Image (cartoon, rainbow, N blue to C red):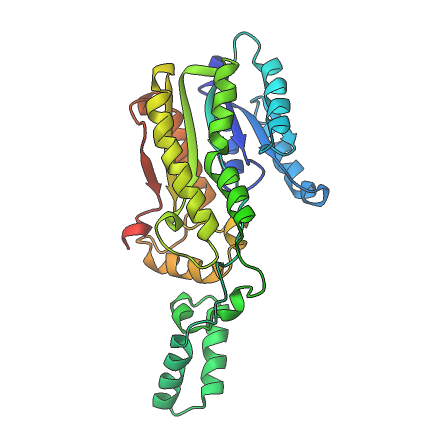
Amino acid sequence: MMHSDRNWWAVIVGGSSGFGLAAAKKLAAHGINVCIVHRDRRSAMKKIEPEFDQLRKSGAGVLTFNLDGLSDDGRTRVLDGLGEKLGNEGRVRLLLHSVAFGNLKLLGPYPGSDVPAASREKIADEAGISKERMNEIISNAFAEGYDAFYPLVDDASDYSNSQFLESEDFSRTLHAMGYNVVEWVQDMIGRDFFAEDARVLGLTSEGNSVAWKGYAAISAAKAVLESVSRAMAVEFAPQGIRSNIIQAGITDTPALQAIPGSHRIRAQAALRNPFGRLTTPEDVANVIYLLCLDEAAWINGALICADGGERIG
């Protein structure tokens, strides 16, 4: 509880699972109060509430808001409630934007690649077995966790060929995962909530530069997020705000599981990573906490990779 005497708060937009929840746990364990904004159905709250209860037992202050944090009204309700908690002494040390609300449709029809089937047929011929039997062997091995087989498995069935990205899909995704963070920062500056040395963090992925099928809208949003983070790093520095982006390695979160073909992305990442495993939410939460320390004050406008070296594998 090394920071409990400073009455610091972390506002986490998207904090009921994945990176946001892991960060809340890490920060609360070190005495930083957490304000969690999330939007979940009542059925999902059966799993989420016990997590929040554990946070409250940490001794740190905990505020939770189950509402639309992407709307002006939702943001106002959160900041009104937070303002009452801050009083005259409390200040926001961290704003973490961890929203996973993007459209995962394809740009257009995708018939699938012929390469996996041709490769399986070649192996079957060399092995002297039927291609049907080879298909069965490959599919079963991949399903059992043998990641190296991922290039040999057909991919067309992973994607919907009935609905495609439209302008509204792009607009909503760009707002939610791209520039909504700016709206939060602007309103918090207007209310004088930030500490003299504050941190704003967003989360990106390798999908910012690698073309994953079905990820076009989110990839565009990540590019926007990284751009506005650099702008905030310059324009808000005089007010003591440091703005950075964390590029997390592939992590088995609900957000990843929603991506079409995510099982292939996971398999490839595990094989590429020098440590032979995926990134965990806790790995990223540790970096988020490190960036909240006084010693990280000179890190501004950066894109920081927290992937165990996956990107270079």
